Length: 359
Image (cartoon, rainbow, N blue to C red; front, top):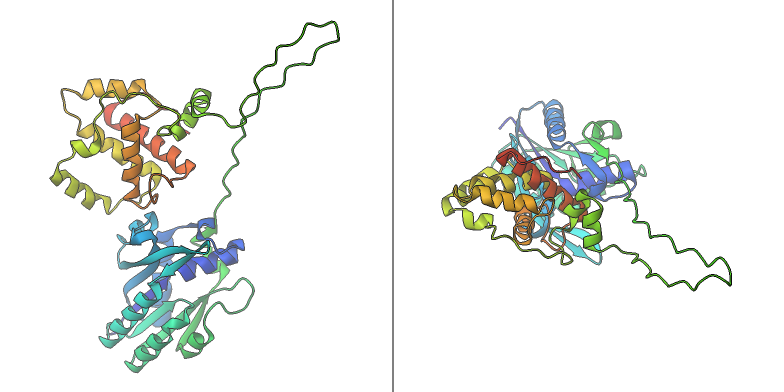
Protein backbone atom coordinates (compact mmCIF):
# COMPACT_ATOMS: atom_id res chain seq x y z
CA UNK A 1 0.00 0.00 0.00
CA UNK A 2 1.58 3.30 -1.07
CA UNK A 3 1.14 5.33 2.09
CA UNK A 4 3.06 6.04 5.26
CA UNK A 5 2.46 5.44 8.98
CA UNK A 6 4.22 7.07 11.94
CA UNK A 7 4.81 5.34 15.29
CA UNK A 8 5.72 7.82 18.04
CA UNK A 9 7.26 6.85 21.37
CA UNK A 10 6.06 9.92 23.30
CA UNK A 11 8.31 9.14 26.25
CA UNK A 12 11.37 9.28 24.00
CA UNK A 13 10.24 12.26 21.91
CA UNK A 14 9.23 14.52 24.80
CA UNK A 15 11.82 13.25 27.28
CA UNK A 16 14.67 13.85 24.83
CA UNK A 17 13.20 17.24 23.89
CA UNK A 18 13.01 18.20 27.58
CA UNK A 19 16.66 17.21 28.06
CA UNK A 20 17.69 19.25 25.03
CA UNK A 21 15.64 22.35 25.87
CA UNK A 22 15.78 22.42 29.68
CA UNK A 23 18.63 20.12 30.72
CA UNK A 24 16.13 17.89 32.56
CA UNK A 25 14.24 14.89 31.16
CA UNK A 26 11.05 15.79 33.09
CA UNK A 27 8.26 16.36 30.57
CA UNK A 28 6.49 18.64 33.06
CA UNK A 29 9.10 21.25 32.21
CA UNK A 30 7.78 21.52 28.64
CA UNK A 31 4.90 23.42 27.09
CA UNK A 32 3.66 21.37 24.13
CA UNK A 33 1.32 22.48 21.35
CA UNK A 34 0.09 18.98 20.53
CA UNK A 35 -1.99 20.04 17.53
CA UNK A 36 0.98 21.87 16.06
CA UNK A 37 3.33 18.97 16.79
CA UNK A 38 1.04 16.44 15.11
CA UNK A 39 0.77 18.66 12.04
CA UNK A 40 4.57 18.98 11.88
CA UNK A 41 4.99 15.21 12.10
CA UNK A 42 2.37 14.66 9.43
CA UNK A 43 3.86 17.20 7.00
CA UNK A 44 7.40 15.94 7.46
CA UNK A 45 6.46 12.27 7.13
CA UNK A 46 4.62 12.89 3.86
CA UNK A 47 7.45 15.04 2.50
CA UNK A 48 10.23 12.59 3.38
CA UNK A 49 8.46 9.39 2.32
CA UNK A 50 6.66 10.87 -0.69
CA UNK A 51 3.51 9.03 0.45
CA UNK A 52 0.20 10.22 1.94
CA UNK A 53 -0.25 9.64 5.65
CA UNK A 54 -2.54 6.83 6.78
CA UNK A 55 -2.20 7.33 10.54
CA UNK A 56 -0.02 8.48 13.44
CA UNK A 57 0.14 6.08 16.41
CA UNK A 58 1.01 7.87 19.66
CA UNK A 59 2.37 5.49 22.31
CA UNK A 60 2.66 6.76 25.87
CA UNK A 61 2.40 5.72 29.50
CA UNK A 62 -0.31 6.79 31.96
CA UNK A 63 -1.10 5.90 35.59
CA UNK A 64 -3.42 2.86 35.50
CA UNK A 65 -3.70 3.54 31.75
CA UNK A 66 -6.08 6.43 32.50
CA UNK A 67 -5.85 8.97 29.64
CA UNK A 68 -4.28 12.25 30.74
CA UNK A 69 -5.44 15.64 29.37
CA UNK A 70 -2.91 15.53 26.54
CA UNK A 71 -4.09 12.04 25.53
CA UNK A 72 -7.69 13.19 25.48
CA UNK A 73 -6.75 16.01 23.13
CA UNK A 74 -4.66 13.79 20.90
CA UNK A 75 -7.09 10.92 20.44
CA UNK A 76 -9.80 13.09 18.89
CA UNK A 77 -7.43 14.57 16.32
CA UNK A 78 -7.77 13.34 12.72
CA UNK A 79 -5.49 10.43 11.78
CA UNK A 80 -4.20 10.03 15.37
CA UNK A 81 -4.55 6.86 17.45
CA UNK A 82 -3.40 6.81 21.09
CA UNK A 83 -2.10 3.61 22.68
CA UNK A 84 -1.37 3.68 26.43
CA UNK A 85 0.88 1.58 28.59
CA UNK A 86 1.37 1.75 32.34
CA UNK A 87 3.26 4.55 34.10
CA UNK A 88 4.86 3.46 37.38
CA UNK A 89 7.38 4.77 39.89
CA UNK A 90 10.41 2.61 40.69
CA UNK A 91 13.02 3.83 43.18
CA UNK A 92 11.65 7.36 42.88
CA UNK A 93 11.81 7.39 39.07
CA UNK A 94 8.87 7.28 36.65
CA UNK A 95 9.00 4.40 34.18
CA UNK A 96 6.80 3.26 31.30
CA UNK A 97 5.67 -0.35 31.20
CA UNK A 98 4.36 -2.06 28.09
CA UNK A 99 4.90 0.84 25.69
CA UNK A 100 7.80 -0.74 23.78
CA UNK A 101 5.96 -4.09 23.60
CA UNK A 102 2.86 -2.37 22.21
CA UNK A 103 4.95 -0.51 19.60
CA UNK A 104 6.69 -3.73 18.60
CA UNK A 105 3.38 -5.61 18.22
CA UNK A 106 1.87 -2.77 16.19
CA UNK A 107 4.90 -2.58 13.91
CA UNK A 108 4.80 -6.34 13.22
CA UNK A 109 1.04 -6.30 12.54
CA UNK A 110 1.20 -3.30 10.18
CA UNK A 111 4.11 -4.65 8.18
CA UNK A 112 2.71 -8.20 7.98
CA UNK A 113 -0.51 -6.87 6.46
CA UNK A 114 1.35 -4.38 4.23
CA UNK A 115 -0.71 -1.53 5.68
CA UNK A 116 1.92 0.93 4.44
CA UNK A 117 4.90 1.10 2.15
CA UNK A 118 6.84 3.33 4.57
CA UNK A 119 6.85 3.39 8.38
CA UNK A 120 8.44 6.19 10.39
CA UNK A 121 9.66 5.39 13.90
CA UNK A 122 10.31 8.13 16.46
CA UNK A 123 12.01 6.15 19.20
CA UNK A 124 15.38 5.24 20.64
CA UNK A 125 14.46 1.86 22.08
CA UNK A 126 16.63 -1.03 20.90
CA UNK A 127 13.86 -3.48 21.84
CA UNK A 128 12.19 -2.55 18.55
CA UNK A 129 15.10 -3.92 16.52
CA UNK A 130 13.46 -7.33 15.82
CA UNK A 131 10.31 -5.53 14.65
CA UNK A 132 12.28 -3.28 12.32
CA UNK A 133 14.07 -6.31 10.84
CA UNK A 134 10.77 -8.15 10.33
CA UNK A 135 9.14 -5.11 8.72
CA UNK A 136 11.99 -4.86 6.23
CA UNK A 137 11.54 -8.53 5.33
CA UNK A 138 7.91 -7.70 4.48
CA UNK A 139 9.09 -5.04 2.06
CA UNK A 140 8.42 -1.97 4.23
CA UNK A 141 10.87 0.94 4.10
CA UNK A 142 11.86 1.90 7.66
CA UNK A 143 12.54 5.55 8.53
CA UNK A 144 14.05 6.35 11.93
CA UNK A 145 13.83 9.86 13.39
CA UNK A 146 16.08 10.95 16.23
CA UNK A 147 15.67 13.88 18.59
CA UNK A 148 18.80 16.02 18.72
CA UNK A 149 20.78 14.91 21.77
CA UNK A 150 21.75 17.51 24.34
CA UNK A 151 25.38 16.35 24.45
CA UNK A 152 25.73 15.75 20.72
CA UNK A 153 25.91 11.97 21.16
CA UNK A 154 23.36 9.28 20.30
CA UNK A 155 20.17 8.98 22.33
CA UNK A 156 19.10 5.92 20.33
CA UNK A 157 20.19 2.31 20.16
CA UNK A 158 23.13 2.09 17.73
CA UNK A 159 21.81 -1.24 16.41
CA UNK A 160 18.46 0.37 15.69
CA UNK A 161 20.16 3.25 13.90
CA UNK A 162 22.22 0.85 11.80
CA UNK A 163 19.17 -1.20 10.78
CA UNK A 164 17.00 1.70 9.59
CA UNK A 165 16.72 2.39 5.86
CA UNK A 166 16.53 6.16 6.29
CA UNK A 167 17.56 8.34 9.23
CA UNK A 168 16.53 11.90 10.02
CA UNK A 169 17.25 14.32 12.85
CA UNK A 170 14.60 16.38 14.66
CA UNK A 171 16.76 19.34 15.60
CA UNK A 172 16.18 22.17 18.05
CA UNK A 173 14.77 24.50 15.37
CA UNK A 174 12.20 21.92 14.29
CA UNK A 175 11.21 20.95 17.84
CA UNK A 176 10.75 24.49 19.13
CA UNK A 177 8.05 25.23 16.60
CA UNK A 178 5.67 23.27 18.87
CA UNK A 179 7.68 22.48 22.03
CA UNK A 180 9.07 25.12 24.37
CA UNK A 181 10.37 25.25 27.92
CA UNK A 182 7.55 25.99 30.36
CA UNK A 183 7.68 29.23 32.28
CA UNK A 184 8.69 28.68 35.92
CA UNK A 185 5.77 28.94 38.35
CA UNK A 186 5.79 32.16 40.40
CA UNK A 187 6.81 31.74 44.00
CA UNK A 188 4.09 32.26 46.57
CA UNK A 189 4.58 35.14 48.96
CA UNK A 190 5.11 33.66 52.43
CA UNK A 191 2.74 34.68 55.21
CA UNK A 192 4.59 37.17 57.42
CA UNK A 193 4.61 36.60 61.15
CA UNK A 194 3.35 39.44 63.33
CA UNK A 195 6.11 41.67 64.77
CA UNK A 196 7.40 40.95 68.26
CA UNK A 197 6.06 43.29 70.99
CA UNK A 198 8.50 46.10 71.86
CA UNK A 199 10.89 45.55 74.77
CA UNK A 200 10.27 47.47 78.02
CA UNK A 201 11.66 51.02 77.96
CA UNK A 202 13.50 50.67 81.26
CA UNK A 203 13.49 49.11 84.69
CA UNK A 204 10.69 51.47 85.88
CA UNK A 205 8.30 50.28 83.15
CA UNK A 206 5.37 48.13 84.09
CA UNK A 207 5.91 44.43 83.47
CA UNK A 208 4.79 43.37 80.03
CA UNK A 209 2.25 40.59 79.60
CA UNK A 210 3.78 38.09 77.14
CA UNK A 211 1.80 37.81 73.93
CA UNK A 212 1.28 34.46 72.24
CA UNK A 213 3.72 33.84 69.42
CA UNK A 214 1.85 33.58 66.10
CA UNK A 215 1.93 30.21 64.41
CA UNK A 216 4.42 30.03 61.56
CA UNK A 217 1.97 28.03 59.45
CA UNK A 218 -1.45 29.64 58.93
CA UNK A 219 -4.57 27.59 59.60
CA UNK A 220 -7.23 27.14 56.93
CA UNK A 221 -9.32 29.67 58.83
CA UNK A 222 -6.49 32.24 58.70
CA UNK A 223 -6.16 31.74 54.98
CA UNK A 224 -9.91 31.90 54.42
CA UNK A 225 -10.03 35.32 56.06
CA UNK A 226 -6.96 36.63 54.23
CA UNK A 227 -8.19 36.42 50.61
CA UNK A 228 -11.07 34.73 48.77
CA UNK A 229 -8.71 33.22 46.20
CA UNK A 230 -6.73 31.54 48.97
CA UNK A 231 -9.97 30.15 50.41
CA UNK A 232 -10.51 28.28 47.15
CA UNK A 233 -7.47 26.20 47.98
CA UNK A 234 -8.81 24.99 51.32
CA UNK A 235 -12.43 24.26 50.50
CA UNK A 236 -12.43 20.62 51.53
CA UNK A 237 -9.66 20.77 54.10
CA UNK A 238 -10.28 19.39 57.58
CA UNK A 239 -9.63 22.79 59.13
CA UNK A 240 -13.00 24.13 57.94
CA UNK A 241 -16.32 22.53 58.73
CA UNK A 242 -19.69 24.01 57.82
CA UNK A 243 -23.04 22.39 57.11
CA UNK A 244 -23.75 21.52 53.48
CA UNK A 245 -27.22 23.11 53.58
CA UNK A 246 -28.73 19.92 52.18
CA UNK A 247 -27.07 20.53 48.80
CA UNK A 248 -27.43 17.44 46.55
CA UNK A 249 -24.53 15.87 44.70
CA UNK A 250 -24.28 15.74 40.91
CA UNK A 251 -24.34 11.95 41.10
CA UNK A 252 -27.77 11.96 42.75
CA UNK A 253 -29.09 14.43 40.15
CA UNK A 254 -27.85 12.41 37.16
CA UNK A 255 -29.86 9.64 35.50
CA UNK A 256 -28.17 6.60 33.99
CA UNK A 257 -28.87 7.92 30.48
CA UNK A 258 -27.40 11.34 31.35
CA UNK A 259 -24.34 9.57 32.74
CA UNK A 260 -23.86 7.77 29.43
CA UNK A 261 -24.26 11.04 27.47
CA UNK A 262 -21.78 12.76 29.83
CA UNK A 263 -19.18 10.08 29.14
CA UNK A 264 -19.59 10.50 25.40
CA UNK A 265 -19.25 14.27 25.61
CA UNK A 266 -16.25 13.98 27.90
CA UNK A 267 -14.26 12.35 25.09
CA UNK A 268 -13.69 15.81 23.63
CA UNK A 269 -12.81 17.47 26.95
CA UNK A 270 -9.12 18.22 27.38
CA UNK A 271 -9.18 17.83 31.15
CA UNK A 272 -7.56 21.06 32.35
CA UNK A 273 -8.71 21.73 35.94
CA UNK A 274 -10.53 25.02 35.23
CA UNK A 275 -12.41 23.46 32.30
CA UNK A 276 -13.40 20.41 34.39
CA UNK A 277 -14.67 22.61 37.22
CA UNK A 278 -16.78 24.65 34.79
CA UNK A 279 -18.35 21.57 33.20
CA UNK A 280 -19.10 20.03 36.60
CA UNK A 281 -20.87 23.19 37.82
CA UNK A 282 -22.86 23.64 34.60
CA UNK A 283 -24.19 20.09 34.78
CA UNK A 284 -25.01 20.45 38.48
CA UNK A 285 -27.03 23.66 37.92
CA UNK A 286 -28.77 22.23 34.85
CA UNK A 287 -30.02 19.21 36.82
CA UNK A 288 -31.24 20.96 39.96
CA UNK A 289 -34.97 20.44 40.60
CA UNK A 290 -36.89 23.51 39.42
CA UNK A 291 -38.70 23.93 42.73
CA UNK A 292 -35.44 23.86 44.71
CA UNK A 293 -32.96 25.54 42.38
CA UNK A 294 -33.33 29.09 43.71
CA UNK A 295 -32.99 28.10 47.37
CA UNK A 296 -30.04 25.78 46.66
CA UNK A 297 -28.18 28.43 44.66
CA UNK A 298 -28.81 30.99 47.39
CA UNK A 299 -27.41 28.59 49.99
CA UNK A 300 -24.42 27.94 47.80
CA UNK A 301 -23.79 31.65 47.29
CA UNK A 302 -23.80 32.25 51.07
CA UNK A 303 -20.79 29.94 51.38
CA UNK A 304 -18.93 31.68 48.58
CA UNK A 305 -16.03 31.48 47.75
CA UNK A 306 -15.95 28.13 49.50
CA UNK A 307 -17.73 25.10 48.10
CA UNK A 308 -19.68 22.98 50.61
CA UNK A 309 -17.61 20.01 51.68
CA UNK A 310 -19.57 17.14 50.14
CA UNK A 311 -19.96 18.91 46.78
CA UNK A 312 -16.31 19.93 46.81
CA UNK A 313 -15.24 16.34 47.49
CA UNK A 314 -17.34 15.16 44.55
CA UNK A 315 -15.69 17.81 42.35
CA UNK A 316 -12.23 16.45 43.20
CA UNK A 317 -13.31 12.86 42.51
CA UNK A 318 -14.97 13.99 39.28
CA UNK A 319 -11.69 15.56 38.10
CA UNK A 320 -9.93 12.19 38.48
CA UNK A 321 -11.99 10.86 35.55
CA UNK A 322 -10.08 13.17 33.24
CA UNK A 323 -6.63 12.21 34.53
CA UNK A 324 -6.18 15.67 36.03
CA UNK A 325 -5.36 14.04 39.36
CA UNK A 326 -4.70 10.52 40.53
CA UNK A 327 -7.08 10.81 43.47
CA UNK A 328 -8.49 13.53 45.68
CA UNK A 329 -5.61 13.22 48.16
CA UNK A 330 -2.78 13.74 45.65
CA UNK A 331 -4.22 16.77 43.85
CA UNK A 332 -1.85 19.72 43.81
CA UNK A 333 -2.63 23.02 45.47
CA UNK A 334 -2.61 24.80 42.10
CA UNK A 335 -5.09 22.32 40.62
CA UNK A 336 -7.39 22.74 43.62
CA UNK A 337 -7.52 26.48 43.05
CA UNK A 338 -8.13 26.07 39.31
CA UNK A 339 -10.86 23.46 39.78
CA UNK A 340 -12.75 25.62 42.27
CA UNK A 341 -12.32 28.77 40.21
CA UNK A 342 -13.74 26.83 37.25
CA UNK A 343 -16.64 25.67 39.41
CA UNK A 344 -17.63 29.25 40.25
CA UNK A 345 -17.24 30.27 36.60
CA UNK A 346 -19.66 27.49 35.66
CA UNK A 347 -22.12 28.66 38.33
CA UNK A 348 -21.94 32.22 36.98
CA UNK A 349 -22.44 31.14 33.37
CA UNK A 350 -25.33 28.77 34.17
CA UNK A 351 -27.18 30.63 36.93
CA UNK A 352 -26.19 34.28 36.45
CA UNK A 353 -24.48 34.45 39.84
CA UNK A 354 -22.32 37.48 40.67
CA UNK A 355 -18.67 37.36 39.72
CA UNK A 356 -16.33 35.40 41.93
CA UNK A 357 -12.79 36.54 42.64
CA UNK A 358 -10.32 34.97 40.22
CA UNK A 359 -7.30 33.35 41.86
